[in-house]
Image 1 (cartoon, one colour):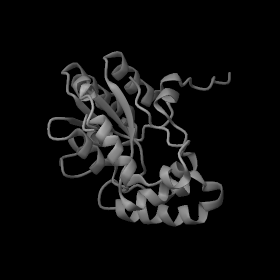
Image 2 (cartoon, rainbow, N blue to C red):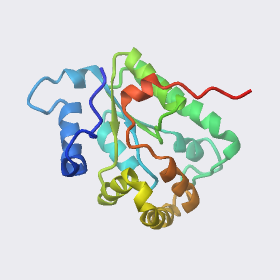
Image 3 (cartoon, one colour):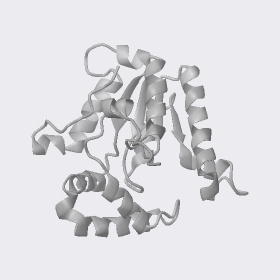
Image 4 (cartoon, rainbow, N blue to C red):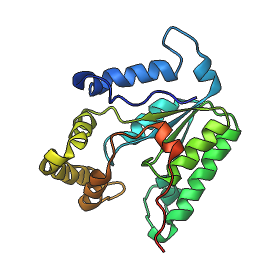
Length: 218
């Protein structure tokens, strides 16, 4: 089952009042809406979306809960690279290995019937995101797109929706997020700004499942 995740049809104020939207998502996904708990019993995969230092990982842990699992590609560069699990040691040459490692952990969690799994990565409209969504749906899990609920992300996501008019403000935010990120992943502002430029506000689970990569030019 695919959970609704497109707020594009909501009035402007309703669409971007993220605390209320997040609470509604929790109520639906965790079976606390005063109705059936069948969704929780079937298991939920949360595909996290958001920019660095916006609270995505914190939100992922909240959604997974004590009995759930968070699978994060960045964890590879803590636990599988370098000589300290407390230090983030990024190696661009091992990025695909990191992606496959994380997907393997995801498959293990699904096959172990973990009821709540948060996939803490970019989860844009691409084949990498699609393989998570397809595997989850094929195994009977519900798939939900989830975002951070930090106050600054509430602001940034509105700016991203209207980025043709808000780029100067987004450039400032890219610098701020890079500063916040210096103690962990050290993502540069220019990289964050590039992600902002490529950010799509219309992504839904259905679009992810139906995605086809552009044909390669010969």
